[in-house]
Image (tube, rainbow, N blue to C red; front, side, top):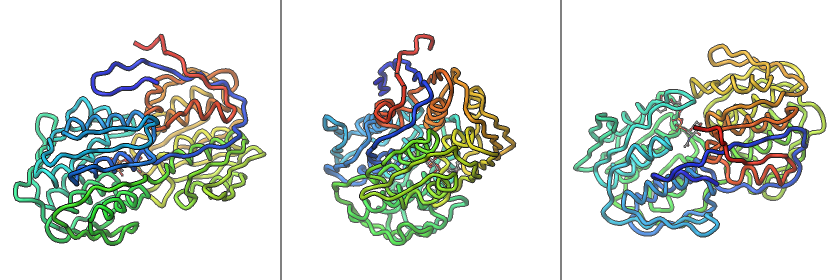
Length: 435
Ligand code: UD1
């Protein structure tokens, strides 16, 4: 698999998806990308060796490992890549450069820990991406509330807090995942008490808080929308296993319904996917628990269901492209509403190339289902759009060629291998047409 770390060149690849198969079999989910990246950043808060387990074998983890190395950490991965150890020195660097940050926006999650540990941080601004402008105002305002001085200059956010951070009241306009994480990671080492109102409640934030508590942090209200953090003077390294990836599990669940298949998903938390699984039941699918996960079976054409994305516990925006793929072949018309990212319908034009009947108006998409889609060349514009397009290819006639698949590799460990095991006809090939 091609890897993009530091200055290493990428080999462009594509997926050739031949539709028609029913996905059947078993999959086992690893730790969540959106948790592991933040857990790795949290390791910066304690000198010594932190171990993180259930790490997915994906490019974003490699990018975060490289970022931590450049800050002075020693990062090692076991052969399977599932266990990462991060040896954090007493004296850390405080600069995250553009060449890595532009490859992975989540690099911004080192901002809070660096200000807390070093009293200063220089983190490159990530720039725009294919799902919208994605501001950082709440991250910045939160840190300013905690006493940091923050300015944006020459493409970097510079923050300083020479005499440390002080606890404060932070109220977010919107429950931003990234801003909640940055402020929590900064506040655990601040002096005094911080209250975060309208905090995001995603399971990955709960996971982060649990690791921080094991490190010695004092956080009350975990899982709720008000967090109270009492700062401590230092934290200790820990051994932590990441929460299973609900978005990967949800992707396979939707794949089962879409292809009228039967997939048992192990190491998956039904309670983290309540609304998506309710929606899948409403399409006519059967969803039943198994010891360590759940099973999704479908034996008829799915019925169209309306979906609106919202912060957790609402329907996850990261499953929206897959639900659009599902609506595209469902019986009837579905209204899909995107409430989290302003430009997350950009990939819809690619779905339309597969024959999907979709009209968008602002943050609504009206999807009229057809019995089958029509294979065509399409381009993955981000991780989840890429996964949605591959799923759509599975219910298309002929072959769908998905390019720019490095996006998919950023979020899904062994995507093609898993699909193949489930019976799909998908191959990864070099993209000789890519410039
Ligand atoms: C994280 C996830 C991403 C998921 C998203 C929402 C990671 C690495 N990524 O992204 O997969 O889709 O949560 O569940 O965990 N916003 C501002 N100002 C800010 C911060 C956010 O305007 O300071 C806006 C964003 O532009 C966006 C919305 O708030 O429209 C949600 O963003 P946020 O919850 O922060 O998502 P991320 O942490 O970027």
